[in-house]
Image 1 (tube, rainbow, N blue to C red):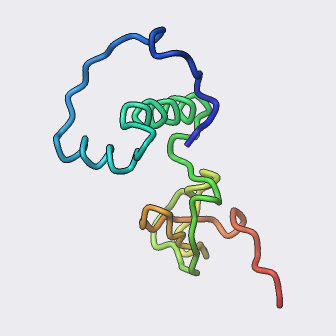
Image 2 (cartoon, rainbow, N blue to C red; image 1 turned 135 degrees about the vertical axis):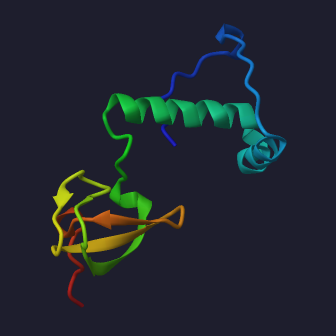
Amino acid sequence: MVTTAKRIATTEMQVTSIRLETDLKERLKKLAGNQGYQSLIREVLWDYVEREERGLSNHLSLADVRSTMPATAHQTECCAITGAEIKPNAPMLLGLTLSGQFVPLSPASVPSPKAT
């Protein structure tokens, strides 16, 4: 999560009502632990806003990738880290993200493994 969010007293915040599904609220509570789910929601929203403002809404960082495997593009793809175009039939990588999704990566976006 982004830690650059403005930390102000809750008395200085505006009250906003939002409707959440019961299951979502319970899952947020579990994820938040002692932090509190409202604080977690604020952090998620700050992260989203800051990523959008920096133009990174659709891009991951290398830290978001658990592992990679070689692949070949069968259609035009967009690297999830750099946004670079990957042309059909070009070598690429499939990156497994922390959330369990596979994303296209250009080989140049990932450091080469070091020889052992």
